[in-house]
Image (cartoon, rainbow, N blue to C red; front, side, top):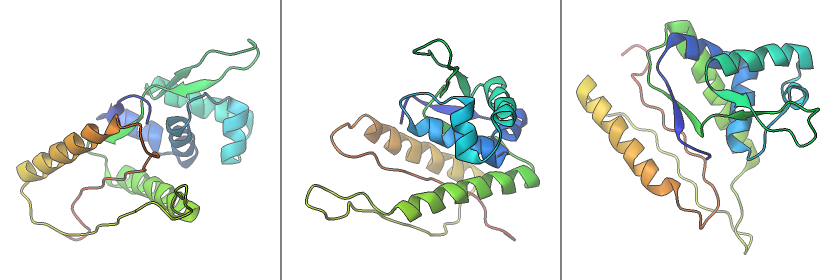
Length: 175
């Protein structure tokens, strides 16, 4: 992950991120060390380069991406301004649903790729946890803060392969 997570607290930022094509480009830019042009982003999402230019400008106005340096001066690449998103604002129901669908698409891509393999050909460990706990709002905030601290402790370790982490915390439907 490159840089700190971008704090998403405003509804306008959530609106910018919730479009599936924008979300896909954002996650790709978070994973890349180099930038991406509108044409490359269009190929990734199946949109035209002109439509993708519009979406890239929306992401830039939200503060998620910025222009990157060009090697030849002709290309106009974009790069992420952080290493990911940390969405702590409260979306409305439609936005929350769209953001969860985007996250589901990312998890699906991760699972489809399979686990990375070590030098001996064996897969690296993966773990999946799903549980329920009873928390007050204050305790839920404390849990989130502590998980973020643990993740931050391991972010600077460059010895092994990069791991994808998804941390989702929320109240289930109908609760």
